[in-house]
Length: 521
Image 1 (tube, rainbow, N blue to C red):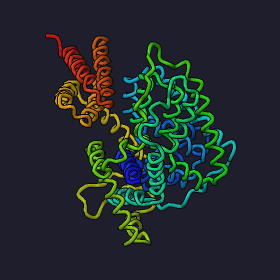
Image 2: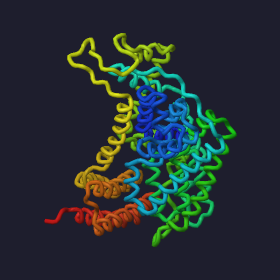
Image 3: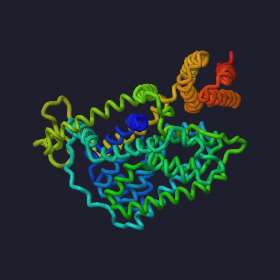
Image 4: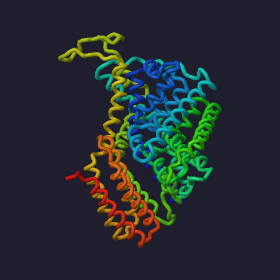
């Protein structure tokens, strides 16, 4: 029982830390909508109650770097702004599906045509489900809540900052916690490795199984695209891969709970059931046409191990193993975002306790005596120059555009230059070889995925910088990745002879890859 509980806690902590950056982005976008755009501005941003609302919803969803948890506070603000339910749900499904970093990553991992078909089918689902909701349940929007205008200047900045903290400690965070709880329950229900044979190429039940797992799971866009690409490379069920991408990234228990709370149980279940049916139909339709040619199906896959209990040995020290696993899986950028998120939650809690009547926000949004309710140019009391008053819609679009620009910059930061990646791969390869010589099984299984990740980043980095890998370099990279996978399987089985064989094969393949990447003399 200790192992089951510790396994569930590990999976929940891994999920919340991985989601921290996009959750913080979600709070920021929600604060901009509330304090800069306002209710009317948010409604206009999404096209109002016109035919443009659905196209605007999936267009904005594709641009914003949020996940299925970070989108919840945005959906709350959309609901309060009087936006139609179909538009809100369409946005809630689209925003987690498409992310600039993950799409670029996916282009190097799988067939670009298959990824294009997946994206096209996903947008079709989003549009159809949005139209279906508005057709079945028309006039389902709320009247926008009255919201005072926020004055410009330093007070507007303070109001947005305080609103971020309020979003962090609000009802939307409870839905986020419900989604994280679903991750823990799923890992406790699924023993370690039980899904390794759950997505076979000829398994007709694979999409159904994946639909059940994906509904409870939380998947970041990056993890989803890596898993889908892995399923292509290993010859797994393409229908299951499509189901995983749509339902895994777009739906979770928190999303379902929010939908039921805001739109009642019966309409929500009708819509969710329809979504499942549409996704499964499309999944079975694309399964045969998109199957990769010339790929020998693998007898098992580790792509879905992250949904199961992480511990195979029930007699092991679960607490020590949990601590070690968390330490090895967390990245510095995710920990920084998680620390920022905790700070926002704490400030929001303090504000709720110390200032239950919202006097802090009232003071920040109170118009100074020398200004009118309209945006006009004024001479500040304590300033050397005249302030330039920008319309709220310019500020809001600048914030949203900044997030898009940050995503683009993030691509270049996440995928460093080829020379830096080659150096990192050399360091990892040295550590990996040292551990294989000593048969340190846990360390081998720790380093192999890291090396594979750097290999995938190498292809994306070259593509981003306008110098894509040549066909010869791609072949050498593919050979190296194949040898790494064989080494990983041998280490899992703790077969010393197999490890001795594949470690030298992998090292020779790495040296050939490194030589192919060296610039010609």
